[in-house]
Length: 123
Image (cartoon, rainbow, N blue to C red; front, side, top):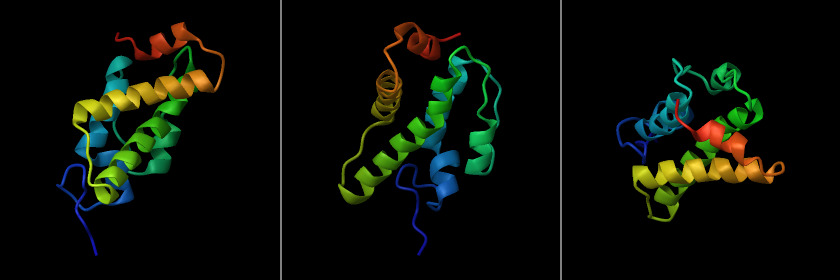
C-alpha cells in the first residue's frame, strides 16, 4: 500500500522522497545551501547525497552533521504527524532543525560559539 507523504501530500512516501525531494525537506536543505551561497543539485540517492555533501568550510565537522540533522528533523516530524496526530508549521520545523544542529555541535565537543555562528551566518 502506497501512502502519500504526510509532509507535502503530493507524492508517494518513499525514503528518497521523504529525505531528499519532499517540499518540506527541500526547505531545510535550502537553509544551509543558501547560507554557504553554493550551487548544489540534490542527488537522486541518499548515499550520493552524503558523499556529495563535502563543502569546503572552516568547520567541516559541523557541516557534515547537517544531513543527519535534516533527516532526524524530518523523521521526527513524519512520526509526529503519522502516530501522534500533531504537526508543526514549516517555520517551526526550520527553527527546530537549526536549534538541533546547534545542540548537536555543542554537545559533541567543547562549545565553540564562533564556529557555530560561522555555520549559521549568511554570506
